[in-house]
Length: 229
Image (cartoon, rainbow, N blue to C red):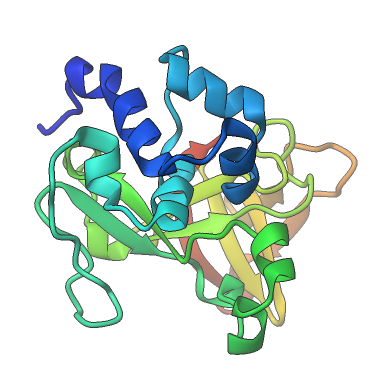
């Protein structure tokens, strides 16, 4: 299994400093839409960024994600140019189709600031293999609202496995019903499903077996991505 060595983590601050290209901490923090405190912590080696923030920094600085994360140069395939969306170290998984911006939105700074800026998400190969997942079946969904709070909060990133061989009792799924998309925990009953929210302010939905065809299961949540401040 490929893992990031401790030495590569220790030297991240040096690669970050190089990527700043002479900008002050304040200017660089604004460029990356992060706080000065976060950037100073990275530069001091006190903390290390999440994959989401590594992706943002790499894009803002026009440097290789893999180099920034590990110090190794690696050519990353662009999913726009090839059906292959992964390489031997990093898989790049697409965003849920309904959360992709229009061309007009993508060109506006407002969209970038209000929506997570990455259109695909990097996942380390070792994690995918350890979980026994198929990288080509994974997508990322940015949670909205508080239906599954406190476990899943607004704008948490969710890695979904779209390969659904069976419904796992008690697992969390992204579900499409008519023009609505929502997260629910599915409980199996003799008569059908119970679609349950973690937030008890919202009602449980009972789905009889005869109505299963009305609900499209997009994928099962296999990883919740949260930034720790």
